[in-house]
Length: 394
Image (cartoon, rainbow, N blue to C red; front, side, top):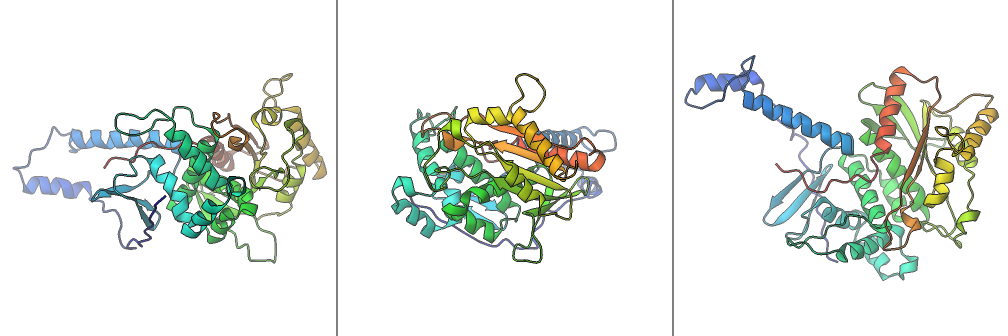
């Protein structure tokens, strides 16, 4: 597959220019020959107010689906599509990126580099990096769908590999577009042995961005104390939190060595991961993202509601929380626990993507500013997998 990468630096002085309304009205007074519509109260033309209202509605609709990350900024020039990601520009061959999903297919190979791509391509399928194989299987699945009159493919129900690849690529793009892509994290993502944990950190960071947080990475080279993954500041309230991400490793899954275990024998213990996160004793209220890494039916036992007591977490989860509280003198050392399960990789290449789970636990004592920040975080975690179809029109 051919792909190109362009890393042009955008001028730092280039900023959107805003024109005060008074300046617009002054120009109107100086050029009476220009036709304006009926003015609304305050002297602003109704057409302008309607345009602002339409833009506000579009912004609210975008935020409801994708959170507080910006739309994909793109431009067409001489048959090529240019897409901005932070300070970089990526561009396609002619007429190749008609939809956001087209761009994402090429995005990870561009970001990880040609050497990584060619190395993985030369490996047997069983030995390939999970992201590379998701991409291969996802593209094959797309191309098996009926072709539309315009030459595109429409996927109504994505396969597990296709959903896994697109969600990962869009999360990573959102992070780079916010200028927060850490080189150390990128190298870990490219390494099969470290990919699983790094992928979950990508989910945690993208979720914080969707929730309207600013990200500040911890100095992992500082050995004076243990560090959380990053500090996040809620832009609306100024509340700061420390964020830790943990993922349950399982033999034979996501590049982890060993033979995969039967579903009924999978461990449902997560106390060790939780205790390790709490032991870091970060400077701000701690939010722990914990990936249970289970097939759907097993996750239902852990993250679903108790069938005997509707509205309550499962017995497995209540036992975990109660044990943790007892081990820490009856105190909750966390501000929020966000348990997730994204079981894309537990189905076959052409099987439908299974349903995801999320369960958030927050001590009842948290209210006010911190409660609002955490509520936004929970809503944002539910936006995982939402990917825009088309590039915004300008």
